[in-house]
Image (tube, rainbow, N blue to C red; front, side, top):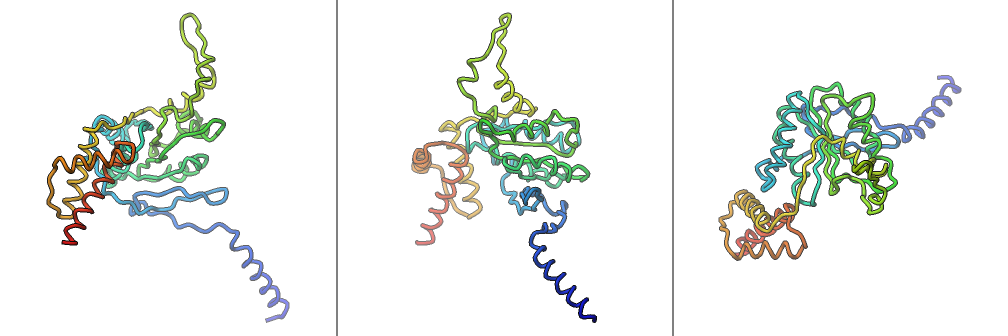
Length: 297
């Protein structure tokens, strides 16, 4: 080989070795027949869908005391799967009351029918058009899931969300729906000063532009589902359910009594709230303690 050609090839290899780390990694295409869920991962100025290994251990029947919310979202999801008109949904309310679990349970219920779940973080909402573009031609039905969605004053990302949900010339494809959870009904902080500029015109109240803008975002969701703090009775019903589930899985014989009920109440008081998450955690702790005691004996 000519020495000049050899030198050129060596220099070319050195340049490629320096450039290769700067080039985007070639990501494999997701097999949606095998993958039930994915998460949007930001990479530089773009991103990609990374498949997730999901556990389908939460069923709709596990969600106790939220029958109305469960029925409404299940019906909306059934319409979506069957190609019928369906609405984007906002699940808002107290933390730990089953909002995220309900969405995961729907995936377990309808995965065989082609439902798929894609998680997207609030900070990545500007990438929604890229995600939607990748999904538009696929046969599966995709729920884009944004957990704990809210915005602070001055943030502009919510305007992108408004456009994707409804309001742009290019509508989202029929196989894509957005489900979001939030502790806020209107997603943006509401201040007392927002109400000071309301005007009364011919006996009717008219909000100022700031209030209109905040309400307009929530209005893009056609389905609103409200979740409220648990009463003590509701909390104990959920505790009883999860103790039964975990005890059955472990083959543990048990019975509900005053001692167990008081232990559950003390657990909730120690954490300052009564909700489904707290009930689930107590059940795991109590069943684990009983099993440990039997093992020590």
